[in-house]
Amino acid sequence: MMFVDLPKLEALPRWLIQGLAASTLHHLRIRRCHKFKALPESLENLTSLQELRIVDCPQLSTLSEGCAASLH
Image 1 (spheres, rainbow, N blue to C red):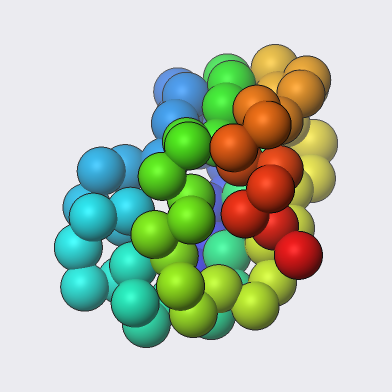
Image 2: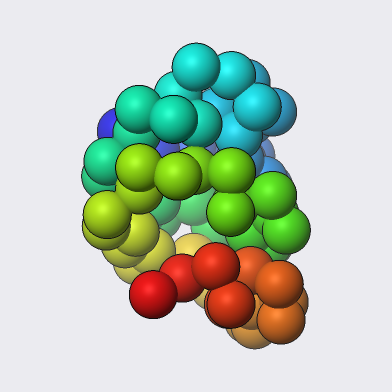
């Protein structure tokens, strides 16, 4: 799944983290979303996620401990 050129996107949609996608999403790319601020603590719910790419999201400056721990 890709989120590209969404200038108002500040966070991942709830349906992505809590819905069916949470167990089936393998690749997530977030690109040129200039207001994207943070990855949620609930990123660990994305149990099938194999690849996460974030490019050109200047408002995203750090990862929380919980979020960073869920990334391998």
